[in-house]
Length: 146
Image 1 (cartoon, rainbow, N blue to C red):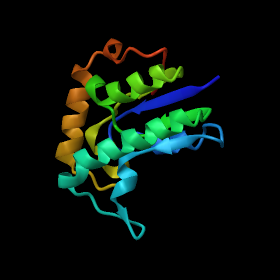
Image 2 (image 1 turned 180 degrees about the vertical axis):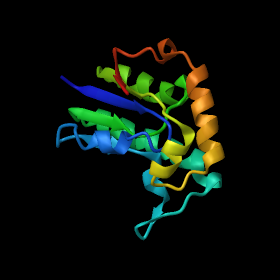
Image 3 (image 1 turned 30 degrees about the vertical axis):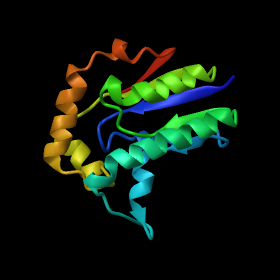
């Protein structure tokens, strides 16, 4: 069965660690991957929109190639962020699974995140996470990670 895993969680919640537990033939699409230059992460807000579009395009290419397990490793805090991926996955006949990482304290996430996301941004992510209704994601299955 072809599956798409949409990861949803605040920075530092363990999304990338979770990916390692999925089948070895998985294909992972992460907008963050475009910010690595010579092995170092360098975030540039001006490029974020472009990189999200590029990530979605690459994601669709994996679907066209009928990859068995395809993963979206972005924060996807709001349903609107995940919606283009969910729509494409369903168009290509994939079962869509949302892996939902419930947030802990902002400081906990701040200390764990590998991309030096500022504490204030993490606090905003947590606030937005708590406001968003999980039903808006319209997926086939939800796995909650506590």
